[in-house]
Image (cartoon, rainbow, N blue to C red; front, side, top):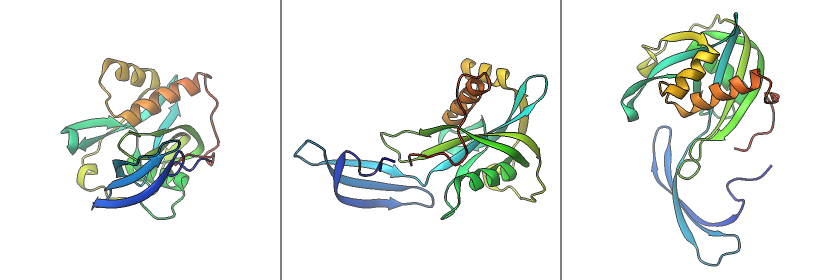
Length: 202
């Protein structure tokens, strides 16, 4: 596995300029392999995240979307369930199961990796894994949603309809777009699903 933080460069100095509740702003002085002069790169350090495309089978596959207010863009967005990997040492699959229960009120018996992505690798270190969750059922977890999650709504819609909403510009969250298109591709047999513990560049 490639070590993303050190592949292709030498790190001379790293400084945390600002440390927030979730994100930090970092400044690194580096020299790229094969070059002599050093350069400075500033970026947002992020703990990583997981997201889930919950699927249930009806006449056609249906996916669950949740609504959540996103303050930076000032809009309520329809998204797949997701959450931060901000609990030290928590296994990503277990984090995904927890988020699915907390945000969607669901458990799932069948899990696969759909896709891994860097959200915005030019300025953000976030590495995100999107899972496909099938054989879903109601969760017994009792969880009180607060803050932006307090007014969260849920909607099961056909996967084909979700893909249409992506293309018409009604779904805007990049993780959700990636997850839905990947799920449509995988369930159509155009991609091989990976084990939930598959290697992950993060």
